[in-house]
Amino acid sequence: MIQFVNVSKVFPNGAIGIEHANLGIEKGEFVTVVGPSGAGKTTLTRFISGEESPTEGTVLYDNVDIQSFSGAELTALRRRIGTVFQDFRLLPNKTAYENIAFAMEAAGKSDEEIISDVPHVLQLVDLQDRMYHFPNQLSGGEKQRLAIARAIINQPEILIADEPTGNLDHANTAEVIHILKKINDLGTTVILTTHDRQVMDAIPSRVVTMERGLIVGDDKKPSIKV
Amino acid sequence: MFWVTIKRVSKSGWINFKRNGLVSSASVLVTTITLSVITALFLFNASLSSMIVSLQDKVDIAVYFTIDAPEEKILALKDTLQNIPEVKSVEYVSADEEVLAFRDRHADDYLTLQALDELGGNPFGGSIRIKAKDSAQYESIASLLEGDSQVARDNSQIIERINFAQNKVVIERLNMLIDGSRKAGGATTLILAIISIIIMYTTVRLTIYMSREEIGVMRLVGASSSYVRGPFVVEGMLYGFFAWLITLLMFLPITYIITRQIGSLMSMNLYQYYVSHLFSIGSLVLLVGLVLGALSSFLAARRYLNV
Image (cartoon, rainbow over all chains, first blue to last red):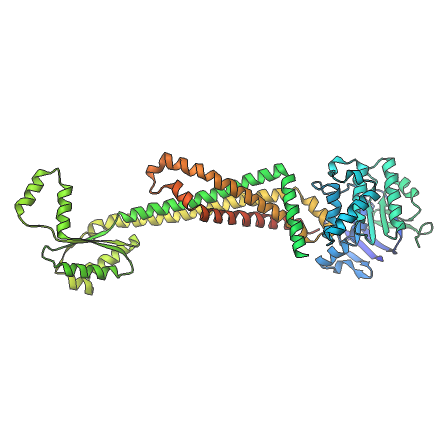
């Protein structure tokens, strides 16, 4: 599904983001990318959403080079990918309902679909009572659950969760991991980045380890989903 | 889908406008200043034009005829002059009207009137007063009557004198004044309009700069550039609309006060002019407000869309 072929990234200031990364991710996998801060985990996921372009090598999505995508094709690709960030990145002037509805509107869904699906997904992440709250009226855990709800509303093929538990306490971390596992069980490919070994241990997934821009480990054994 | 998108973009723009209360108010305020400057410049130009027209109206060329000049010949010359494109109007004053006007002017001057009576007959010939469409054209009209033209040759016997030479300096100065005022007015209008447009664009850019992360998130959840930009353009147009409304209402008391305070120094009633041209001024300023608001947002948002 996703192939990183000899991918390198050197930033304009000369810093090396990724060095000669080769990695394949299959449909339905749960891949946890671990490594300390600055290891290149986020850069790796940003290649998939087209936020970053490699300075060398190619990133293929269903055997097509993402770099060759036009603006419209990139927009279409992003509708097939859900993204969750450490800092939530919710739309501050929109309610919980509107944040999710926006992702559906962007994907060209009808009003009827929005009215029927948004309450359903909010219920799935246990936010049905927070439907008309703005992000600043939600706790950290609620914000992250809302971000996950927004990421999965269009039934994406891939869910990228970039340090989603970084700002959460233990209880909320467990809740987020539980939701991500549930989403993966339903067939969505999940790519989770974390620097937290405890999070990694809590998920029986394939673990890709990164250090200073290099992939230094790829433990496929315990967790490849079928 | 097109109309659904338009509806969603408009609704989103309106909601953002309402929810960003403070930022929206500041943007409306700055836009109001921009539109007020444009309205003021519009009124200034109207006032300047009116002043120029009023000055031009005070200038004419008078052609005085000999006492025995036949009236039909004077009227024939009047008709000829009226057909010249540069001529705005030609007014004929007969010898009888000249003497009556003279008597009126000197009603309190007994000696002059007595002298006139002693002359016995009417010492005045008729005259015509020519007004040009543009004061710069008086010279060519005068040369037509004084020079070597057919008209001058045909009427040299009946024309006693033409007062253009006496008025020439005044007319030339007036032309310079009018030309200078027009140029200065045009340059001032252009400079102030550009400054206010830049201020407005910068304000809108600032409000969009504050939303740059939001724009990035919208792009990442799969919104197209136009779908992200749309609500900002609507917001920009709303700034323009509300600023237009405030400007339009604000200028009613402003023009009224100006007219009451310094109306006597002006050649037009500014308040009456504003009220009678409310529709045309309003339409123009509304158009400027909407286009500036939309264009500023469109250009400012573009910068943050490349995610």
